Length: 490
Image: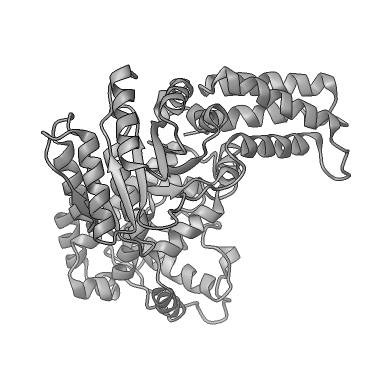
């Protein structure tokens, strides 16, 4: 998401490079490109016009700063305007002064309300709160069963009265249970429709009256484009929303919904769904989203993802193993699974500044190679995972692993050679020797063209077969009188 928008913003800024300062002539040219970018991203026209007027006014009134080029100044102003359009700062959930916090989820059918309810329930549970899910969608087949299934997966209780009761009665009963049994939050999943209609809105009003919620969150599919503005306006005028949850942000949507919701309703986006998994929900931070739109990455979110998955004790243990060169295939498998829990390789890489424009084909190749490596490790015995030297000394073991994983023996040989080199380089990095993405260095499972992959620059002594009959060298000892190659020489 946002890739095309990022490219168009970059093209607009390029038009200002080489200029002495921002003037009416060159800013108008740049803003034309920005206007086309926003409209192509399905941003509502009612949002585009004031956005462009704000950027133009600030650009012409900005003081010339020595050492800052016009294109850099333009990007800074666009970033600030994007942050303001999307709400300025993160908006936390409203809190009840007493009793449970009641949250009503509304939206069209197919927007992902039921899944969003479970994701939000898990998010609150991880904050040591006790949420209750209420199944008030009595129209969609299996909606109640779906919520019960999701609730059991995340360990959150689900309340339902079947599909014969009125939705407002179910919602009210769920709130009553929440109060009586001391739940911190009650999340009410309501029914959606294929389109906005009076019956749907009337039912939502009745549910709101029956529950008196502290939050009414509109669940919006990020892929609906300019329709997001129409949907947001209709719900806000008739039901009254306090915030929004933007789902399917990991899809191929153009991003217009994220820039339209706050401007149309005045209600902030509070959460975004970034995948199908129940864990794929993040609080919405306008400044971080603006940075991602402009290709600046999102390091803070990446750090939060890592902190959520990695224990300090595990990090210290892994660092010790790296320093002592005891990093093995079991550790590598653990790290790959950790990355999977954090999200796709592509989504993580694009959070790193400067990596937003990395070739998607390279990322797909990297993910495919990681799967192949995981399959090979899955065919190893526990002893082989703990001691990679067993494989280096035994062609028969490598052939068995190749057969068990559906790969060829040379592929296993290459994977082992890459792993051995990676282990050496990670040991050097842990001692302050640099990042293992330099010439000839990298991680097995990533394509060499990405700059992070295991490239072809292996020293001869580290390649499969270097010492005869396909054996893989574990360590290469320098000849007498020859200086061992350093990291920069690999």
